[in-house]
Amino acid sequence: MIQPLRTVHRRTFVVLAVVLPAILLAGIEARRPGTRLTERSPELPSSAHLVRESNGLWTQHSIATKFYGRSDSPKDIYVVLRPMQPLNEPDLLLYWSTKTPQGNSLPSESLLVAPYAADEGFALPQEKGRAGNLILFSVAHQTVFDSARVEKLP
Image (cartoon, rainbow, N blue to C red):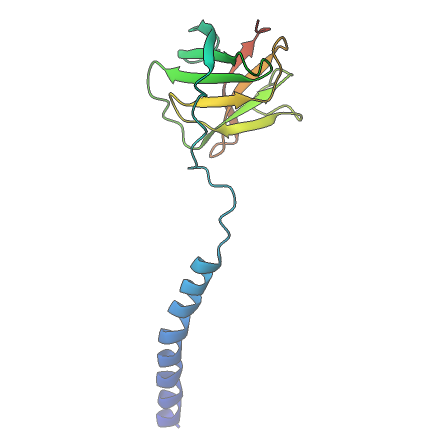
């Protein structure tokens, strides 16, 4: 009775030793690329010019914020964020909202701008002359990391 069971177990483990790695490799290959948080945002266009610069917009952190406009496309606004000290928060996403965040949750109509990266240009989904809020949201902690009120840009 023991010998036939040992034979079945040995064959089962040999099959599993081949099949399980094959399933793992097939699963890795089948993953969809989707939106990756490591993708880089586009660079500032060459026609961009500085519209406004501020070091005191953010409520909790010192982040130098520069806004750029384009003369050939007056509705386009770009923002570059440069923290004075590294932001040691995982998976920060930059959002734009016309409403101020309440507590640690995003306003319902918040628009995702891009994954946050220091010293990189982000195109804002707004028109010149409209006020709103820039929000840094931590995906890992599901909280608002920081926010900045942006007044009307010229």
